[in-house]
Image 1 (cartoon, rainbow, N blue to C red):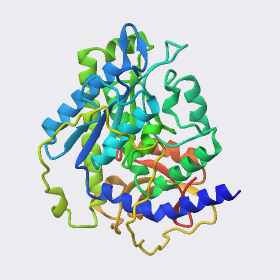
Image 2: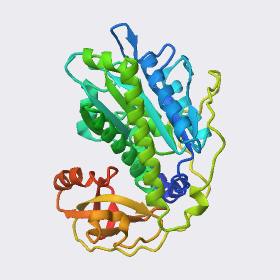
Image 3: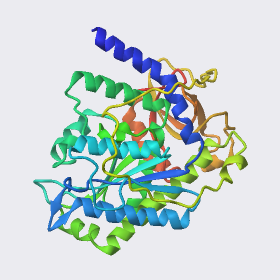
Image 4: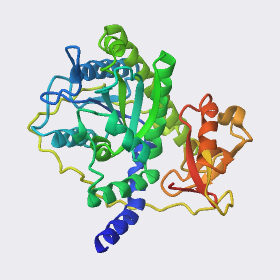
Length: 394
């Protein structure tokens, strides 16, 4: 009982601290870390004479090259740009990838993988994972996700680990969790435009996503166990198209961050910044990684804005968030497009305490149904829970 109480107190303590960490989003997207999953003696899935680690690397390098060429103000960091591993054990290898991203002060982390189903070769499609947990998706991953790589998941059967991880997941709403989801939705949107089967955005307790202190996604570009998809993702044409889809999502995400987070401030002071030319970093394998599950709080302090709930309600309801800001935005702002006049303001803790939303639904299913249409105008839109005019974790 005392241990759980301590964990709860740590969780409450980290909420205002994590709000400060959300400032990396407020600075825009200056550094993108691209992680080619697996490597060395951790090949990932293997089918038809191909290893996942090589496919991941080829797509990662193509994506990085597109960003470097077309967005020279953004620095690209690769966790690996060659065939290599970082440690003799997978857990330390994953932590090292996160350490590279954190040490680079990354603003966005993209981990590229290929999927496989050990029993059903008919399963196909793309999906993008973000840090989180749900009973449905936890059971699904037992049958499908990372069938050959169980160590990539945090052990949620361990009481202490599960309590710490769930506290971290709850704290994500105060920092960059919603931006991870926005990026994931954009990735899936571009996969769909490419004609690939969309398996959606899923929440999973993955080690590498847990350990990165920035908006982070892990994207599955297709199933190696499906002969048609294996042929596609190993072809030059397929890899180029997938890299282009990911690049399209990156461009949309950068625009989304700039549009939604600088609306209340002088954006000219930040949007005109030009960073040094993109560089690649291939850290040495002998680098000593930080301990797994390491989450050290910052000493920075923040002053939260006073809260004024916009909507009164006695029960939890659901709405669709399309924008977040550090300050108030006019509900008639032209950026709301055809939804101008239909948008409402909801408040939350953290740096970006003003949330702008569409719709009011009694149950989550109704909101999830509505979000499909809203994403035609706002691809990054997602469902949030609200009570008494404030965002709640549910």
